[in-house]
Image (cartoon, rainbow, N blue to C red):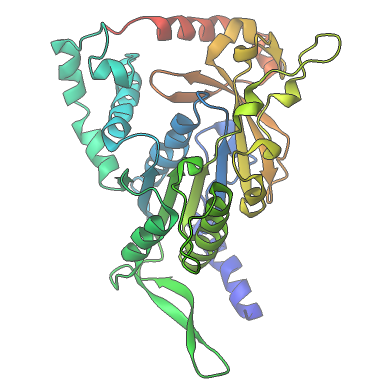
Length: 375
């Protein structure tokens, strides 16, 4: 790459920022956005947590609704491919209706309740409010495509390749080899303001791939290794300059409480870590950013990172940077308040600030509201 080409990148982004444009998509949390640049083209970000902590809902807010909100009425065009390996597309869109009802009407309702499962039945009044969400959901559906029927790495690769094999999207660039042959060296977008996302939720549920050479089925470890290294890194990131977001669960063993010989809980043993990435922890080498979500209330922890968990309860989450190649945030944490039914995360004030005013009273009231049935 010529030095002039490198300088062109610096100058181009400088002009974009000076004209009020966007060079990265910041997170929806004000304090975090001051230090973390957010999503950029060709980036690979992983979100990890134990089961049931809220990683899917966090990714939906961070990589779907936040991306749509921040790019709405801007020069950027967004296309999000969401490979839902855990839930079906119906539940995916129902979860966004739950979020919309909470933000618009402060109604706390889950996907199960929206489907009138169990003892709850949706009222006509609530159904009327749900119908009002049509425009908001349509805006999302214009930019987000949910794929819940492809589970293997090669299937995902073919789907993504099919999108880019379209001259309306762009064209491949080639490099000549010494023997005269040409190989694909990259991809040039027809619209440079188009940002394409690949979200995989979650990677541990990928179906084991079959080796093209031996025709034998690969292990789960080999399947994840091939998907991240050969497809996400080499094709999606380097060739297509996609924004890649991968949900990677922690191992089941990481959920077990570990104590000292005196019976004290060792918190660092139950918090998310790179060592406890499920099936294949080695692929974290290809992740640029790894963020872990932690719910200390599961372990009856009373104070975590200075926050009083006895007051915040199950609504508290700690977001910790486990790996960061760019911003120096590794091992730093952010306190979040989580509404489990609606999937909404909100940034908490700093722990020392929470001690003043009526912050704990406010969040305790929010927690009480979450437990109430919707009207």
